[in-house]
Length: 193
Image 1: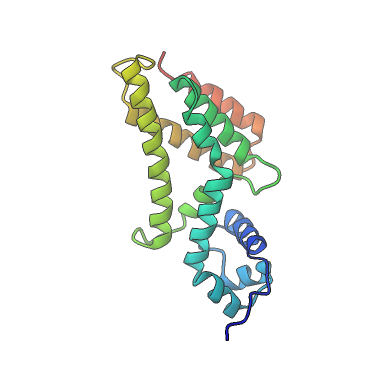
Image 2: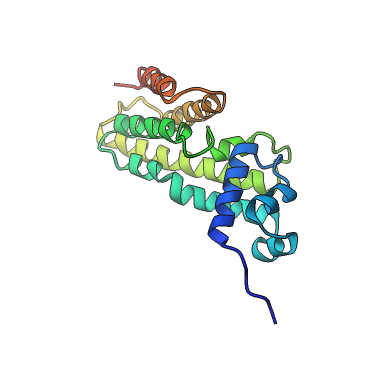
């Protein structure tokens, strides 16, 4: 007969999220995770299967809870409004005092050396999915005349994502919300009229 879980799964995932966000995926060990989550390795493996399995759960929850701003941004009435809303909300997220600085996904992406590994694939999939949604929204804006016909929706989507990633690194290095807001204002000067 299987034993019932004796720990709070949501709290355990929150603790894991904090560790991954602060330390990155590769620098977060199983020992770090089980200690922070208050569980034993057998309970960890029973509940999550593996570190990769836990990380996928963390990413799914992070996307659902923390990245809702991306969906909000897509509903803005203009392409510039989409870009502005997304970048300012990224600045807010990256400097939220209730969380580690920067972005969980960005903080975990760079140290992954194996491009074919499940972690790298999951992070790449999230990034490409967000860029694809932006590209589609900017295609609609160009078709409706909100963006000039000579503007490349894919280029604009990549621009927003790259500025956002840069702000994540800047926040991780100590940039304040005011610093990031100035970066957003500067980036928006390059937006097509």
